[in-house]
Image 1 (cartoon, one colour):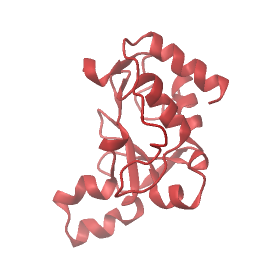
Image 2 (tube, helix red, strand yellow):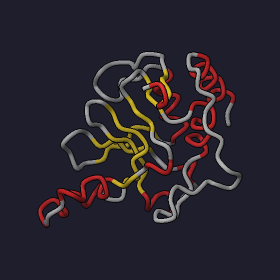
Image 3 (cartoon, helix red, strand yellow):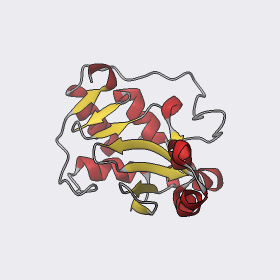
Length: 166
């Protein structure tokens, strides 16, 4: 983990009573059904902070609770929706906002690229278009830490609430 990310995560952890999660060694896989390794910046984030909410707005998911955009919409699926969903169907969602934004990585990127080089995709509410909001997961966290307005609501408050406290 880079020193910048270590500092960022440590500062967030200080505002949290959560001790993070401690995955089993070698548990870099999301779910057997997805069969991909997630970026190390996200694993490091979970180790220090665990699942929870940044600014009580952006909610981060544990790997076992991650789903693709298609899986999240499967109960509403019909032929028309399937066609609209095609560009973002394989986005593995790791965070969602109170406004309905979803952040994730394309599974096809996680398969063909080193996970740490995969861009972060944002799917806007009621949309089927994915937009790259960060070149990597590490950059995504750095942007959040710098107060970037990634979701149209301004900078997120510098507060992290672990899932167990929500």
